[in-house]
Structures are given as structure tokens and as C-alpha cells.
Length: 463
Image 1: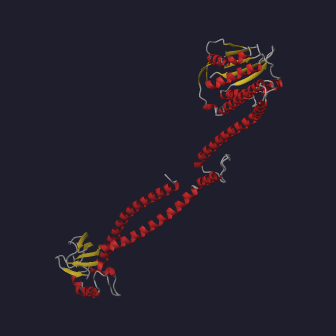
Image 2: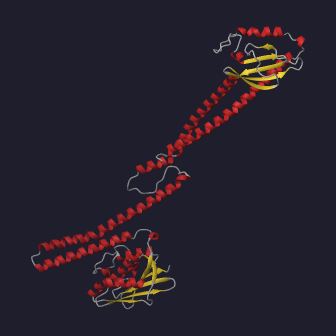
Image 3: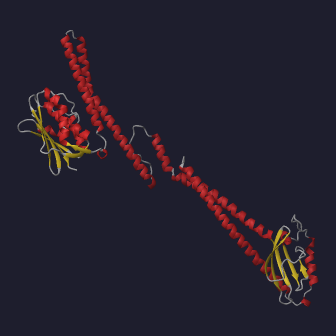
């Protein structure tokens, strides 16, 4: 269907045409029946009128005088050209009267009547084919003299009247059909005007303008679902573009300084004459590249965590096994600082419905932060617990802790408290953790330990 307007116009026009044809056929049959009934009644009425004049005894009727009166119209030219004089009428040749006695002798006859009897000598309606035409006859017997009166008219009288009526009906139907088509076209055009306005509004809209679509007037009820779906789509597109803009802004903000430092380090290395200093410069540049790479990975991870939580794919995850895998992957980092990683879990298995990849990222960030902010030769303890309402993961380190006033800001993007200034980081790890928790309806809390260090606890509701 290329065009709704064309489809509606063609469909409605076809429907009107079909209904008009059916109506015309029914009208034709009904009109034919009514015309025949009307002319039959007229034949009866004329027969009664003539019978009233002739209802006398035989000796009181001057048949010769009547015949002479009837023959006065013999000068009318009864031919197929339908010519008449000023005293006649074309229909005179199409009506006929005959009077027969009871012995079958023709007594009276109009010039238009044939020489033979138009019907049998019995009362009733009859039809008789004579030449190209059919005669419709009404015959009755005159009581006073037992004469048979026959009043007839030719079929073309009825046909002409019927054709005139049907032509008038056909002309009216065609005119009504044309008028209805024009009116329906105008109504369809007006009815589809909101769609036209919507199309024009979308064509004229700037690519970066993704605000909800609004028309000057309230859209009809049938278009409200379309507007709602379109505005919902624009909202999702706006969210996606906002995520991209936020990612680009974050990347530009976070990478500007590392790239500047990297450039300066390479320039210094280029000017060094000592191989040792050159090697140190290269090592520093490589460390800067590693930090920048880690920053980009963290930014990409955070950008991927934006979709709605109801679209999150969930699997059965064993927290004990998953935590052991993450600890094994981070062991080289802890080993560099001679740190001890311990895992306490009262239960052998701790099952949970969640996204395994995201939960692994959450654990890795928690433990990596503990390794990063804990001094060498310290202990980092991970505890897994469960109660009827939730699953809890605790990560305890022996670092410097966090000032109480700054705890509420730890999950903000790029925020790093002053005590971590000497530790490399992006300030994105905890914001990623917060996003993963939001997707799983979890929460996080921070508490400084009395013996020193920070205790980070994440809780997940039991599904």
C-alpha cells in the first residue's frame, strides 16, 4: 500500500460504485413493476370510462356515427417517424380501442388498432405481440349490450416512460457519486492532515533536536499511540546520544592531562644523553600509556552499562566460584606489593541471579581498589555472607581510609579524595560499581575500620 489516501479513495469509490449499481438495479426492477402497475390501472380506468358511454342498449348506440368520429383521425400519419398534425399527439398511434359483439364481429376500432382482435373475448389483462411491439390489453364485457370492449396501449409507451425515469435516476446517481467522491476526498485529506503535519515536522527537524514532537493542535486518538511511540524512540535516541556525548567529554577530560604528560616525557627522553635516563623516560611513557589504556577501558565499560536494567541478561552465578576467579586474576598485582588476599565464605556455594560479566567487573574493581590503596605487606580480606533478604560482599583493606565528609562523594565520576593523590587512578571504578548495583537493585556502603583501612560492603537482594 503506497498511499493511505489513494487506498481510501479507491476503496470508498469502489464501495460507492458497487452500492450505487446495486441500488440502481433494485430501483430498475421496482420502477418497472410500478410503471406496469400504473399503466394497467390507467387501462382499467379508461375502459371503465368508455364502458360508461357504451353501456346502452344496442338500438340506442349509433355505431356508424362513432366510427365516423374515429375515422376523422385517419389523416394522422401512422408511420415510424412519429409525425403528427397540430391536432394529434404521438401517443395516438400507440393506444387502441376495439369493440366486438358477442359473435366476434368488429363494431368499433381506432385507426391505430390492428384489424384482428387484440385479445380473446374474455375479461382480464392480456399481452399480444404484433410486429415489433407488444400490446398490453384490458378486456371487459359491457353489461347492457354484451359487447366486448378492448382498451390497449403499445409497450413502447411504458418503455419510454421507464427509460426517462431510469435516465433521471442514473444521472442523479452519477452526480451524487461524483459529489460524494469529491467530498470524501476532502474529508480524507482533512483527516490525514495530522499525518502530513507530523511528516513535515519530522522533515524540518534538526538532527540534534530530539525533544518530543508536538503539533499545534491535539492529535486525534488514533495517532496518539504513534506520537507516544515516536516520542519514546526520540527519548531513547536522546539518551543514547547523551551517553556518547558524556563518554566523549569524559574521555577528553581524563585523557588531556595524561597525553600532555606523555608528550613531555617523550620530549625529555628524546633529549636525554644517558641510556639510563632514556630507559627511565621510556618506562614512564609506557606507564602513562598503560594508565591511558586503563582509563579508556573504564570509560567504555561505564558507557556499556547505560541500558535499562530490565534488558539485563541474568544467569545463575555462584559468588564463591566467581570471587575465587577474580582473586586469582588479581593475584599478580597483590603479589607485587606482598599483599595477602583472603576469602571467607561460610557456605560452599552462594547462588544468585545476575549478569556474570558485570558482577565480575564489580568484584575486580572492589578488590583492585583495595590492592591499590593498601600499603605493602598488608592483608585484604573478602567476606561473602547471606541472610534471608540479601547477599553481602565485604572487602576490607588496611589503607588510610576515607574522611567521613567525603564518603558520600566516592561514587561520583572522576572523584578521588585527597589522600589518594599519590595513587594512580581515574576516579571511575566506584562509579562503575554503582551503575552495576543500580542494574541489579543493589546498594553500596563505606565504613572506616577502627583498626585502620576501609570496609566496602555491597548488598544484593535475594531474588
